[in-house]
Length: 227
Image (tube, rainbow, N blue to C red):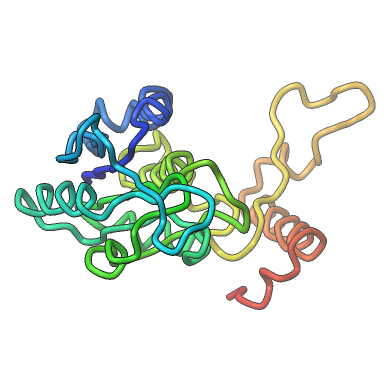
């Protein structure tokens, strides 16, 4: 998979891709993450990429021309499955969307900033709009890193145990059950005996029951989609 991220602040999201699971995925050659500085695609003086909004109002707007130039440059080199715009008014990101995107080959993610991007860029180039929640960030960079992380970890070979992602919260519309490790006894708290039994069927049954209970208690809204 290749993910091209277009941003006016590439330094802001370099770190997440240079550590831990995402770094290992890059080293293994399972994913390429390329950051593109939007300022490299402007023809304006002083590398300008934003301007005041027509009609007035507070905040600056990212211009359509550098966005168009960057996207067209990338699309001239390869075909992309999706051109994604990170925006608070997009579709709320969830595990289902992450699963779908993990099956793609090439993705472009455009990070908004300031007051957003010129609407014509959305109309002309964007194929999917994603939000990571009902709140506003300073820009789409952190949101793009969140989406990339959720997608990349699903690519076969990225996780050392490929069954790990299958037991994550939300994969089956249930929250993950409690997990334990050594020591078996900590102060007055002990690990449930079933987890020490070695009986796989009983352990799986316990985990399902715990996942269901946790979901009913904390996120009952998820159960309407439970299969």
